[in-house]
Length: 609
Ligand code: AGP
Image 1 (cartoon, helix red, strand yellow):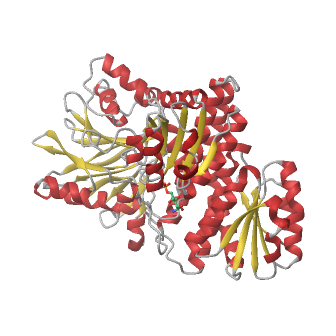
Image 2 (tube, protein in one colour; image 1 turned 180 degrees about the vertical axis):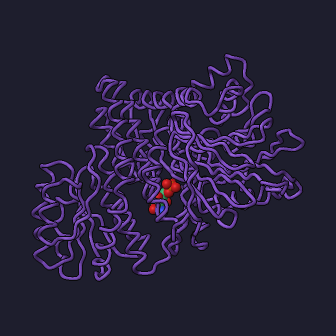
Image 3 (cartoon, helix red, strand yellow; image 1 turned 90 degrees about the vertical axis):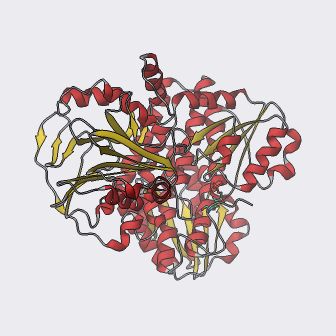
């Protein structure tokens, strides 16, 4: 994930300060690196560094630079660590163009190898540097032609948008196949931004680029071409935004924005995890004598769900444990044949890191899974895979949970494939199912939110509650209870459905909330119905979360039970789909109870000690 912001002055006004402010507003999209490309005497000059735009600006003295055409970028590192080389903008071999991008290229490694063979000078590990070199060979082509776009889109795979500053023609060209890109217009400027909110104060009108379209921005304004190469009338809307929402990309809380980013994060994750590293990860899993999955909190819940993936898809049963417990109870069996799969969103959690030191001392191999490729976890791992969900600012983890589940699922599929348990066609079909889920989730999120809001109203009248499920979705019950505590200070416990009648039921009565996550398997769901009925009969507040086409869910809803209908998907992806209503429920309850949702008391985003 990254943020693109560009400005062209219609006169000779300096636009560097506008781009700096635009990038500052996009910081929530990542600030591992920042940089700008400007035109000085007709030549491209690049100013970039590690750190946020404010830090980079102070370090490089950007306030002393003046240019009427500026292309800027703020970066969340997914390919290549947050070093100055990997910072955008990137240039071609002759420095005739500068490129910035958002998203990632899933065929990056192959493109890089090919370009190096052709003699291009590639100096970074950032995937968007290859875009600059691909563009090099296309410089004299007609950009607006459908052939040009076809060529671009046939070469590059993944989920990405990018913008190119062309020195000779003094213009900026941009396209997207998914990540949002907006243009902004005023009497003075022509602008480009990853979020319409960052345009506030600089543009009066704005519009959004559709996937597959190409925009050319110059001082005369924008021209847009469809994927068929046809010029399209530029349509714009008045830019009327609530300035209070500018810093959080249009949302009241980071948590709400991050839940709304779940579908997009799934696509970003899918295109960021490179095939060759997944194959390697699969080989580590299938070749290990014994496997531990270690993590804390939400990452631990993802690891618990992954143990079902590995067992069902690859016939491998890892031991899943809290990273805080691992060095106390499990080191005896750790040796050179051991694989430790360490999951940490931040990559800086103290318990995870100290467990890794112990495991490494005993010769274990480490497969790290982290959202921060510059983290200590990434550096300590023999192999790491990026979660690539984009920065997560709210303390309650949401989109990183669903994307972590996805990475673990991909590793399990790779292991399964290597053990000959599934065909390549099945592996591909399962990847397609992820894309379909992301799309359906995107379409249905507002509806799920409205149901979660109603459920939160009811739960707000209760003093305490359970989240109940079984099997693949039992760890989700634990995760739901954790989210409720963090976002709304509501006391909740995760309960295994089979254990419900063996004790926990004693507390269930009027004023007590029982939130059931309907298990995805028919038999398991049926085995859970009696517990739902038992809870209803006590007069407790009952909420049932399940897949939209689940017959029992429909019946319960017709019978007056509060339900939240999640997106229907295939069984192994159900924990991802069902996590979203739970996250929204916790968020809406926190909002109703006026809690400090993004920064709950006593908690920090990364527990480093
Ligand atoms: C999640 O909502 C919590 N804030 C917390 O449990 C967190 O998941 C845990 O501290 C682990 O963090 P990590 O993934 O960065 O290692």
